[in-house]
Length: 438
Image (cartoon, rainbow, N blue to C red; front, side, top):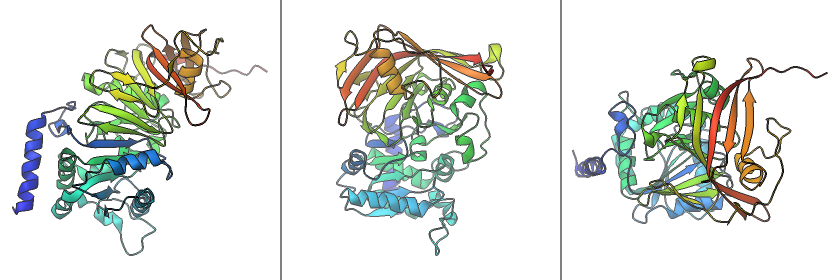
């Protein structure tokens, strides 16, 4: 073992020994790899715009001066070279001047490159020389695509870290920032949501079979091993556009450990800047962070059948945070800007209970802001989702309690921006039949 290898190995041993197991134990020793307690994470919910200055500058500013370079892990993408170049261009546009390296870790050939077959990079995670090259890297970026490709290439057949992943953990412990978008967000937690849509997750049993990326849009819930950089909870992405509240809550019910029953749903073009040493999260970008806390919730049913066996949950605590808000995950404290709505609600109307395109405020922040916590006439809202073919459906019930808090402020221009804390949510199975009124 040469000197550089010995130093890296020693750093990793010290890191594992001193941190202890801060992540949830999902059933194997490999999954108990402790998360770092230093450095930063930048977790982006997908569809990151190239002009999102707040997010790009957060990544650049978090890179330590002692490790000035960036490495991109393109494994998740079906066009690894293209999306690595796109992220490089965006970094340059916001003033990054360090070296950017694309790590040769991928499973798909990029059709835009004629002289390189990126599918030959499948075993790149085991490359010792590649691992050693990360010693001067202070920013690691995971592109979007299929998150199972990233875990398949950075974990070995026994589920243990490959040399490259071990080296990434060392850099994080030395103060680096690890960022990722879409699939690059999903891999951040110890358990990873690999597939499934909300309605299927809530009305059908979970599966252990992955059939491809199409099952991320429509299919049963599939949970697998993530990379565990985030020491608490589970991450879901594209949260607003793909209506993933249901699948995130269903995933919480699969954890036996309290630390695994906190869900972080990140909207598109939105990021969480995670300060691992300070143990807090700051929201950046255009959308919201939805925090679903199921530690004191009552989960029942396994989804194996209708009736008594159908999945249900009561008393999940929801918070919806927006740009500039902070969450301290140890004590659950939220620091939100704006005026409190309780006692000075702007609206007073009877909101319609139901579901579908004809109802206002389809986004969660709008629904819980305009229609519930900033509305003196409502203490409960009900929304329904169902499958027309099978009649299987669910009722989402949102309840304002004495502990619920709402905050309102103007965002950009005159855009109403809500932050909401401690809304109680229940999910119940329902059966729906549609008949024509004509």
